[in-house]
Each structure stands twice: as structure tokens, then as C-alpha cells.
Image (cartoon, rainbow, N blue to C red; front, side, top):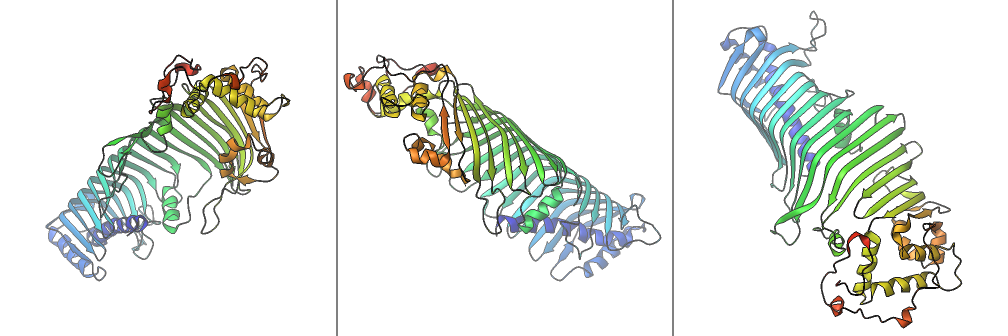
Length: 510
């Protein structure tokens, strides 16, 4: 059973558990004796759907609070089982508690409080457990209505909650979960404390979040949309998600190998302000970290870094009606690497039915202020080719900007930049005549030496004004030995890049 079916089964069974108990509740709500409660429960059992079994070991009426306490409760359905050591139902009211008492609506049922201890829900696709589940102001819809979309609840809490797949490969755990104002059309707030996610198939992945808070979203509407496969819904107003102390760990070698840190951040904050078809999106990440342990991040270690650590800010305006996004700022500030800022316009962000989105680039402005990354890249490339770093830079400059190249050309600007990356920012602009796939960004390095490719992207480059592209005094690579003074440069193994981005001298070991 896939994850969508698992979630649907567990949610439906959870609702069915309270409905099964509640169907008896409104029958005996005005009675006082325990034997009458038991008679009502026995009568309710006879009216359960075929294949559904409902048992308990003890039932105690709580007439003053219009409730009851049941122990060792078990509700079996053809698709699963629900059990609880104790369930308390308090304040049972037929229909809405605010409607006229003269004409009650027997198709719905309201409880002031529903409390379950040692709750367990199992289905063919997975299971859910909670040490304690407390629901306040819960309105159960008629059995003929959808139990997910029509369920209403003012407040809910769960402690030591676990959701797991049958095969045990996927699980989610939380020390504490709080949900306020649940129901279609209601603005909800959902909080997870010490959330842990586990994926057990190779490569194993484990994620932990100290706290996760979603505020301002119609969670019931989002759940309905997800179960129907309609994607996420936007609604007018402010929505925010805050996550703190996130850490992703996982296997970095073969199956069964030890887990290591892969990525993490100190705090993430996503804010969406929606008005009609337009949404203003703001996102920030503090201390976003990548460790050189994953296959896609090993380059960090190759360049001599212990990890990537940055602050990230995104500001964008999304117009879903026009299918356009304008990114006013995508700022990545990594003190030991550099400072990246991107602004641009994108289209085709909305997926067509049955397909994935295929974003297209309309315009892009790119700025990079180096803090040591560029010299490390150049030094590492030189070492890999068995060349002296200074000679390698000179060779690149002469390749990109041969004699007679205009000083304002892309090659000349890049040649001047790599001579002194610390002189100022390097800026790149893409302005294609027509939208190009976002994947076209991958060919930017090739566009440096392919004029037609650069023109198709509308690409232009501007180096810092203080950097010089003049090669008059640059050493001729033909007069410089390609073999470094230190023979260990040619030895196998990763290079050790110089600190602070300073170019390596010929006497340093690489």
C-alpha cells in the first residue's frame, strides 16, 4: 500500500473509532445508570456496519458531565484495528452545541473532550500510536459524509506519537503535537516538538527537527487537496512555517554503513502573503550547512573546506494567474566561500495535468563577491592537471582573452577577474530572446568559449572595474615550466588549498 493510501486508512480508522463510540454516546447522554450505558453500547454494536466489531472490558457512565469512560476498547474494521487502554468521552451533544435544542440534528455528534490513553491504530499500510491523545471541541460528521473533510476540532494534543509503515522502512515520531482550529475553511496552527523522520531503505536517511510550526494555513483543505492529488492550495491571508534545529543524517557508504551528517540548519522561516492569484513569498535560513559526506557534496572537501555554512534569504512574487514568478532576491552569504545574489523572472511554474512543472527562464541577474572560493577552485584545477597554479591562471587568461580581444568582451572580463577575484564582484546577466529551460543554467561555463551559445542565452559578463585584463606583464606560459617546484603536487591525493583564498606559491605543498 502506498503512503497516500496509508494516510487515508489511518485517518478514516481514527474517525471511525470515535464515531463508533459516539454513536452510542448520544443514545445514553441523558441516562444515569451504568447498566443503561451498557445496554446502549450493546445496542450500538448491533447497528455497526458489517465486518465491524466493537468490544470493551468496562464502561462507566459519567452523567454529570454527559460522558463515559471505557477501558480496553477495541474497534475492528475490515482494513484495520483500533485499540486504547482507556477512552473518556465528555460533554456529548447531539448535533452542533450552538443549534436549537428543540430540533436536534441526529446526523452529527459533538464532544467537549475526547481523551484516549495508549491509543494504537493499525491498518494494512501502517500504524499509528500515541501515549495520550486529547481532542477538544470535536464535531463528528454524519457517517454518510467524508470523515476527513467534514471533521471539525477546536484543539488537539498528542504525546509520544508514532506513525510507521507496515514494513518499518518509514516512520515519523514526535514527542508532542498540538493542533488548533482544524476544519475545512478554518485557519489552523500545527506544532511538532522533537519531530523525527526515518527512511530505512538504502541509503538510510534520518531527519530530526527540534520544533516545526505551521500557522495560518487551512490544513483540512490542504489534506483534502493532497488526498485527491490536486496539489497544495493557496488562500488569502498570511501563512508561515518555522522550523528549528534541523539535521539530516544518513548512510554515506554501502548498506549498513555508519550514518553521518549530510545537511542541517539552525532556523528556517517561510512566510507567504496571498491576495487572490498573487503571493509574496519570503524565506530565510540561518546557518544552513552542508557537510562533505554525500556524493554530491564531496567537492567541498576537495576544495579544503570542512563544511559549507551560509545564511540564505529569498524574496519573490508569484502570480499564479499569469504563471510567472519574479525573484527579487536570492541571497546566499557563506563567509568562507563568498556572497551570491540572484534576481530573475521565471515562467511555466504550474504543472499541467499529469505532468511535472517545467520552469522556464525569462531573465536572470547573477552577482558573486568572492571570499576565497575562486582561488581554491583554480588551485585545485591546476593541481589536477599537474600545473603550477600561477601558470594555469595565466594560461586561462590567454585562452579567454587572446591578443586583440576587446576589453569589454566576456572573455576579457573573466580573464581580468581571475587575476584578482578579491577586487570586487563578478556579475552575469542572462536575457534570452525567448524563454529557455531552467536547466540551461548548467551550460553557462561552456558559453564562455562558445560565442553562439552565449548569444542564445543573451549572456553578458562584467568584472570588477579595479581588475585588469591587461596581459602585458603576465608571464608567458611557454616560458614557464608546467611542473611545479614541489614534486608532491603530482602525487595522488586531495590537495590542500591555501587559506583565505590567497594564490598558492610554488613552494607550498598542494
